[in-house]
Amino acid sequence: MKLHWQIFLALVLGTITGVAFPGVNPYTSWIGELFMNALSMLIVPLVFFSIISGIIGIAGSGGGVTRLGARIGGFYILTMMAAILTGLILVNLIRPGSHIHVENAAIPAGIGQTSVKDIVVGFVPKNILEALSSNQTIPVIVIAFLVGLNLHKISPEKKNLLTGFFQGGLELILHITRAIIKCSPVGIFAIVVKQFASTPDYWGLLQTMLLYMLTVLAGLVIHVFVWLHLMIRFYKVNPIKHFRNMSVPLLTAFSTASSGATLPLTLHAVEHRDGVSSRITNFTIPLGATVNMDGTGLLECVAVIFIAQAYGIELGIVQQAVIVAVSLLCAIGSAGIPMAALVMMALILTAVGLPLEGIGLVIGVDRILDMARTAVNVYGDTCVAVMVAKAEGETLSVDRK
Image (cartoon, rainbow, N blue to C red; front, side):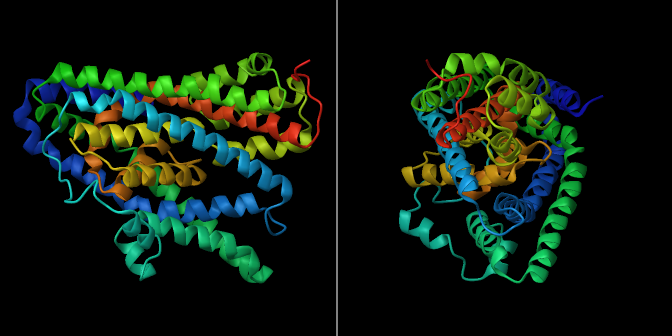
């Protein structure tokens, strides 16, 4: 049985057990805590190695980021920010998590009250080892960026040695991650039992989950048909024709929930149907499959704020800005991570001090949303390829007449 079906079965059994036999919660809750501890254990090495490896890939093997690479990176940041801010606005307007209140969460004091000064000062740790050992997510991200951006400045021999170390470290931690993810059905079962056993309003929780799912889907639709289409129209591209040309890779991405599996189809559609040159296509699309995660960034932002609302925590502007920033930065390192949404969500929750067990509130509908966000991730890559081609002066078959 495939992993996503195992997780679905665990969700069903966990829901039934939590509703019908809430007394078993004290005997199963430790399993959920063990699973959350395992996820928490992965955060620092996964973020550290994946961000450095991502920057190494962007910088290329000749040294430095080229003009074309800088332009592509700028477009990817633009599209991801548009997606994340769309999710931020919708989750604050709809407030899907405010219709239910979840108890029994170990919530640190002072959540939602951190000042801008505290956030900025916290970017740079007093002690690198202390930041690594205490799961201080934002300083670890800053350290990883500093290492990745300066790696090409050292001698080639030492650079190659360290590059092999960081990429090998990422490969090792991904193997460990896959081993832990294989145990996720058992951990998710225990988490769901706890959520339903501690929530008297079962129907309210289910309705809240439906509203959360609709919020994410609405954000994805707005991002595709409003923001991405406005961006490519700015470069005098016909968005309807472009969308139609991308139908095969989009349907494949939606059905497989894998941007990697869709990559050959995306490359073919962008080059042969839109008319983008192979020089740009072969650089932009594979890079986008690694670092450009419009749909994933939107979902993570909505999910984390939804969890805070469900626990009755009002996040201030500063904390929501941190969520936006961390969602954006983590997109660079999320490619290739098994169940990336689950792992990255744990990272963002840690960054703002929210309880990791809140993941149990959203994991139930993740498979459906995974299909939708993957399609949006792929479509964002194709739109960036078109915009880069137009910025480079190319004439395309999807140009507006």
